[in-house]
Every structure is written in structure tokens, then in C-alpha cells.
Image (cartoon, rainbow, N blue to C red; front, side):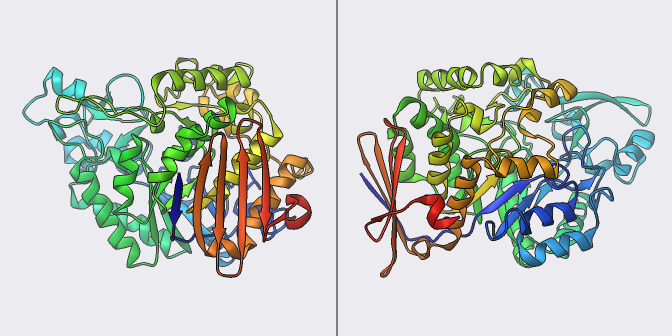
Length: 496
């Protein structure tokens, strides 16, 4: 099996919360330019809006056009963007119940000028709803996506896909588009050049569908993309789902996430079986954002079968049901049960499609396995994004989980400058940094890519007419070799 791609890769990016890696925007820039000097071309700054510490770690802003003053100002963001490509979240699907707009609706109901912004059950089903309609709606957490609230003195069923403090928006209205473009203008006007469309798949609610990635959602993505492109920004679509959905979406947007890569690499390293990963490499989009871990959990739905419907019996996944069950059990075992405490009914974020765990703990704290996973991530076509906890070989933060009760917080550690400096002294962290510098500097990554599988050995190569770089991974032995020009390379010594 040989796979080839002529789509060049772009430089690595960091993923981090400003408050949890540096303390604020100025502190994050200091970390980027001091401890991580010359490592990353860009940074995804997780939500920095007001407030950054709400019910969903910033994904429920009261004001999406303001930087929380505790983190800094637009001047700080522009300073960061002067040296690094900055990606920010465009939270498309919902707004906080604490926002001025929704509070006005709570007071005045339909008489509020902001009422068209927000969805209730009757917004989508004005003539009533059947049991079949309700059962069909896709939601990433148990139960129906509605919360009973009082709006203008009347009890209403308000559409809340994620939490009861995040109210879904009506994308069909002029008020929505005015609101959304004000955010895009604020971000692109202050140095942001890559917009991550958060939860956009849930925006297009249409009767008779599962209300997920509907034609309305796709049309909105295109409209946002056109508006962003005119302002010099690219768009990344954030969608968890069957792997064929990512392939389809990738044809019409700038970037999609490769959410299948993290579980497939875990399977390959734990079971010594890279065959499912190799099958994915044959079809995966080259315009991918490559991740191992993010601020969310490790996706499982992304490698599983599609959900059967009345017209579709379902399509197989990249892993079968037994392989998925074995993988999830292995993650819980490798993490000494800490991931089990943070996932599903054990935690308040009841994500049905993710396991909450640091990538390092999912690999049982195996330094060599983590480095191999990072090297494979860096060698694939696309833009590699490296989450700060994974980079620093972080363990599940059980103290933070106990304090918040939020499962995802096991992988969202709050780190001081001293914590970061101590982590960087670890060999596995220094080796990862060397690998990322290699990805940034080696000229072969501007060339052509190919991959070849031979039993448990996966070989990844980049070539130009003058340079070449080859990564050979033996998943049965959990070992790798790195060669350039036919000469073996010592990672840390050559590229630190």
C-alpha cells in the first residue's frame, strides 16, 4: 500500500488557554517567544471572551466581541498576531443565558428586539412536534436539547444543545447574521487570520431531519467562509462524526479536523496494529488540522460506524465495535481508572462520543509511545496543532476535576510559569519540541508525501528534488527510526 499527496504542509501551531498557559495574553506570548522560541508558527488561543471562565470554559461568552479584561486587550492580541498566526473560536451555535441580549428576552419575551436571535421549540416546529421528530434530533449528550425557561412571564422550551446556560441561535434571521459578522469583524480586525467554527454542525435545525449538518448548516458555513475570506481569514470547521463526513466536508472548506487520527494512533500503539490507520491515510483530507488531543476529549465517534436512519442502514467505521470497546477499556486501564472517573455519567459533561483523558495517560505515561504519536502527527499532510497539556506530557488533573465536576477539566490543567519550566526539563517534552522544530525547519516538508505499510511497520516520507526525510515506525516494537539523506538522525541532538 502506497499513498501519495502533493499538498504541502504548513507550520505547527500550539493550542492553549491564555489563562492556563501564561496567565493572560501577554503571558502566553512570553511563553511562545521564550520557552517555545522558534517552535510554533501559530497559536489557537482558546476562548478569551468575557467571561473566559463561565459554565463552559469560555464557550459560553456573555460578549463575544470583547476580550475579558483579566486576560488583556485587543492590543495584546494584535501583539501576539504580529509574530504568530492566531486562530480564534467563532462560537456560532449558541450564546450565554447571561448575555445582555438573552436577559432582555427573559424580561420582555417576544416583545424584545433580541427575541428573533434565540430558538425555542416552536421556532422550528410552529405546528407542533411529534415523538418521531423529537427522537430524531441528534445531541452529543443524553436527553432532549430543551430547557424550560420563563421568557416575558411565559414558560417556554428553549433550545439548548449543550448546556442549560447556552441558548441556541436562529441562523435564519437578519439579527443572527448582524451579530455574527460583528464578531468576525472584531476578530479579523485585530489580527486573527484563522476562524474555528465551533459547533456549527448543530446550527441548521430543520423539521424531518436530525438537525445536524443539514443543508442549512452547510449554506451557513459557505456564507461565513465567503465573508471571512474577504477579510483575509481562513475557516476551520469543527465537526465530530463519521469519517466519511469529514472527507465530504473537506471539499468545501479551508480546513477540517482530523479527529480520527488520535484514536487510530492509540489503537495502533496499544494493539501493534497500524492497518486501520493506514486505511484512513488512503482517504483522509490533506487540508486537515492534525491533532492528538485538544481541550475536548478523545473522539470515539470519529472512528465508529455511522448511525442508522430510516433511509441509511449505517456505514462501517474505521474501527469495529470490538476494537472500539477494547480501545476505550485500554484507555481506562492505562490511566489507572482516572479517565473513567472523568467520562460519561461520572462527570457533568456527558459527552457521548469522547473519552476525557490526557493523551499521555491514555498511553500509560509511555514516553516513547507519546513521541512516536507526535512524530506521526507531525509527518502527515496538513497543519499540526499541538495541545499544551499533551506537549508537556500532562497527567489527568484529578484535583481540578474534583473542584469543578467537569470531565474535560482533567485535560485542562492550570499551569504556572514554574510548572511549565519544570515540564520542559523532561526528556519527552524536549524530544517533542525537537520534533516540532524539525517539522518547522526541514525543507523536505515542502515537497511530496508518501506512506507505505508493511505489516506492523508504517513508513512516512517527504521528498523534494534535493531533500528527503523518512519516518519508519514499528508499531509492534513501539520503535521508530528517522533518516534524512539515507543517514539516521538523532532527534534531540539534530533539531533541538
